[in-house]
Structures are given as structure tokens and as C-alpha cells.
View (cartoon, rainbow, N blue to C red):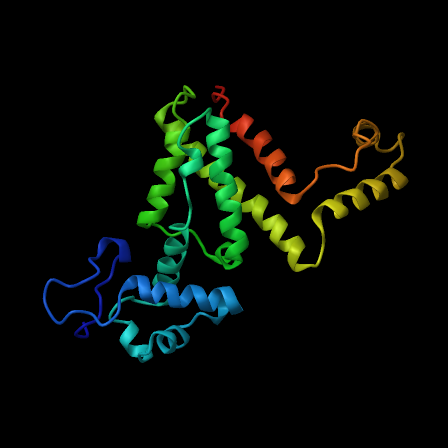
Length: 238
């Protein structure tokens, strides 16, 4: 093994500083922050060992003293970004309200850092990911769900927030307004649906409210998440 190069295994199972040798010139937090700035500006593909090394003022080879590869660098970035989540509004109240507060934080995080949608789940969660799990489990107190069911709910909840935010971000990237798109879609379907060929769709459209719909994209998100949470908090059936 090359001197100064970190050993294998997850970055989260290795201490940031080796027990012996010189003190590192840079910190994981500084390296991750540099990568986040690049990803925010130009997307995740722009994050390379070379680009991040240049941003922190070192050579690409020097980064291998801190991370084994680009994958670990992205893990650092993603977990540091998750540290921006604020759980103050989820501290008390009924489970749905607490989880919705966390979901709103998650949506805002994805909107600030849309490149997070391109990050694959790490095999071992980082410290801020563990904090997210802890606060989500705390919000599930009093639901009557078993421990395994609560852990399953955390995964499903996280995935629902990600998917809902992804839909919104993809619409923004395409220059679409989600609410206007919903109205145009409803008008289009109403015009082509046949009660004979599409009886269930025709009936659902006929029952749609006559109002202009939710006032904001956040209302759309809240409405979707509230319905999802109602299902997540229901005890599993056998």
C-alpha cells in the first residue's frame, strides 16, 4: 500500500486522521464543501478528483490520502449536504406533522442540490444519514409500528421524498410549471377520454374539483406526502 493512502473499506469506518504520521493538510469537510460547490454549479459529472483537488489547492494525487476513489468523494459530499437538514420543526406534534416537516426539509435540500438525485445509496450510511434515520424514527414514536416496521417506513419515506422531489426538479429542468402542467393534462384527458372506453378515468375526471388547484408547488408536495404518510403509518397487514 502506498504511504499516506487510506486503506480499503468504507470511509465511515476509517478515522479521518491516521494515528501516526503528519497531520493532514485538508479536512474531509473542506474537500466535501469544494465538491458541493462544483456540483451545485455544473452538476455531479463535473466533480472529479482533479477538479476538487484544484478547488482545495492541491494536486489530484494528494486527494488519495483522504479518499480511495471518486465514489468516496461523492459519499462525503452527499452526507455533508444532508447535514443541512433542520429538524427543529419536527421536534414535537403528531407523527404526520413531524414527518411532513422532515419531508419539506428534504424537498428543499434536493432543490438546493439537485445533483443529490444522481448519487447512489451508499452501502454504509454516513453520520448525517444516521441522524436523519434517528429523527425520522423519533417522529414515528406513538404510531404503534414495530421496530422492523418503523425501519421499513424510514426507507419508504426517504424514497417517497426523493421521488416526489425528483418529479418536481425534472419539470423545472424541462421549463415546465407543475401546476399548469396538471391543468393542461386534465384538459387534454377530458377532451379525449371516452366514457365507453375509459369509464374509470372518465369518472375520476368528472369528480375532479372545479377550482384551479393548489396554490403552489409546495401545496402539491404537501398533498402528495400527506397521502403517502397516511399509508406508511398504517400497520402492515398479514
